[in-house]
Length: 221
Image (cartoon, rainbow, N blue to C red; front, side, top):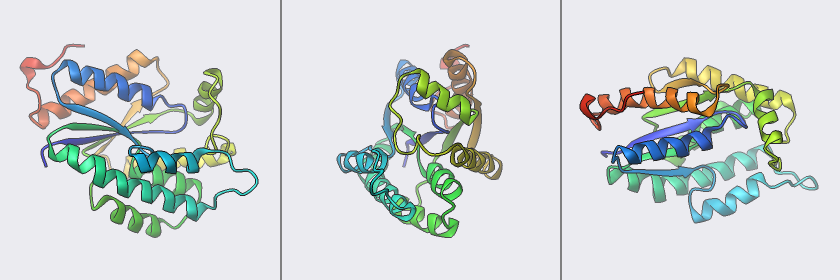
């Protein structure tokens, strides 16, 4: 497998989707084959699962375990249909959320059993891990305020109580501390240009390490 899987993670409103798109445009300028995708919703089946997972269901809310299983189903389809084929063809894959989201949201946020989450992730991913995870670190209140300022309609997850989001953020912090070899913190409270600069600097180093680019075609900052 010649491609590389780069995952963008973080709490609501951290800007990962915007930053992933900017990163994609930058890699295209370097003539690096790149694709973007997301979880949930990176496949046709995933789009249906995304709707089930994120739409508001106040009358009959989804249980925490059902939520976990739906995310696992989305991931299993996504890995087989999108991630593995693109990686095998040598592309750099930029993914908006992956296994760390499940650990942070369903593990820390929902307080579900971590052993169960680990087993489901192992089944759903066939052992596929990210080559690099970019954690966009942002205070949860600031992230949610960004969403409101942009006029976004809050989905089911965003409408959770603030304590839930704080537990999720704690999960991301502990993941970064536990897996420093693949998990890199990005200061996401800055303007989007400065956030992107951090990402490009980190990725330039990794792309050189992976011999995808050399110092001769390394962009200056």
